[in-house]
Image 1 (cartoon, rainbow, N blue to C red):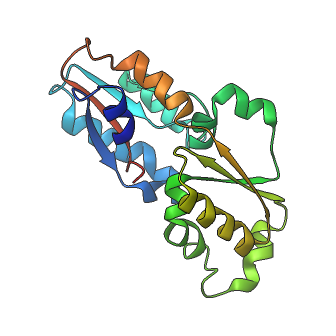
Image 2 (cartoon, rainbow, N blue to C red; image 1 turned 90 degrees about the vertical axis):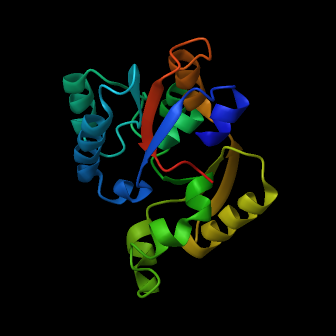
Image 3 (cartoon, rainbow, N blue to C red; image 1 turned 30 degrees about the vertical axis):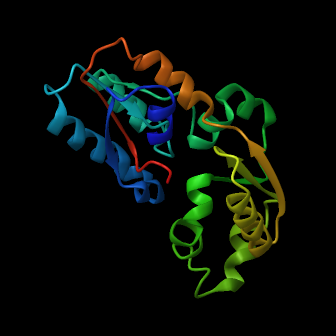
Amino acid sequence: MLALRSQRGLDHVGLICLPAKLHNSPERIPGAVRATVARHRGHYAQIKLLYADCGTGGALAALCEELGLEMLPGAHCYAVYDGVARFAARAEMRSFFLTDFLVRQFDAFVWRPLGLDRHPELRDAYFGNYRTLVHLAQVDAPETAALAESHAARLGLAFERRLTGYGDLGVSLDGWARPDGPRSARSLGASPPR
């Protein structure tokens, strides 16, 4: 989000980050969004939600309907970065996806939470039905690509890298936050990629 804000001249857009670890317990996302919106509503002309469904089973969309918020299209960030229509058309049920952020934070968000650091024998139970680790790269960074490929090897998966850029996130931002729009727009989202 920070990179897009800079690239597109959207310095007038504020960002309130929610903890990225909420994605490990998606049932907590709607409550965190509700509380954050309650704290900031009335202070800004607009609030937009930089989340897709993210595993909430439609609960986040229902909350947005209730609160009158717009959110990102799609089921999850992988679809948003790849492009929702393109992602759906691929129907990749046997691929495990990582964004640049997840590549860099793999141990903190995948390896340790799944207990693979303590019980590597669980790898096949978790990843045995996957065939490919797909790195959806927002930035063309060889060191991140190499790290993603090493994660694929750790998981025993084939590796594929797609340079997607910011996909539908950029499209949504362009529609929501043009520099000539309200100077007090605020967006909520997970901690931005670093």
